Length: 189
Image (cartoon, one colour):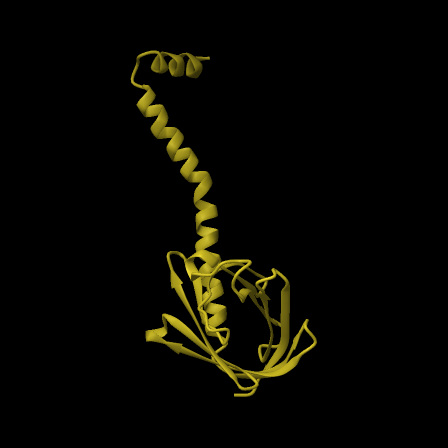
């Protein structure tokens, strides 16, 4: 019990004071939390890398839960020295833009919508090639129950076929009903 006696002696007035204990506890806590912080940074970096691999032109049939179906054309291009990915989308005759970029240790999507608004969404998860975003209504100047806007996006990459992926989003309406849209798109260039 020499260690225990030495430890108690230091706690009771020796070299080990409350300040030292607090510092050691902080180091121990940091050691446990660091892997979680790195996992988040890793998830963000991997998600952005996967998004950048979408560069090119894509096309598919977008089916919506309201019974409508339109041709979806997507064009992805790296911009701003590789710090952003521009998505130019066309649903039949409706053109829209989406810009993905890294901000404050996450991936942010700013969508210039055919609904005449600008939802700002943040990465919520990226696992096994499935990249999910959720709109921050307050940051976007939107109000649930009042505005109609794109609420979520999911891009599901297909590891077995890099020339196809699933593109999905949801729109929340002023009556709080949800319209889902989904397409499997194929690379055409």
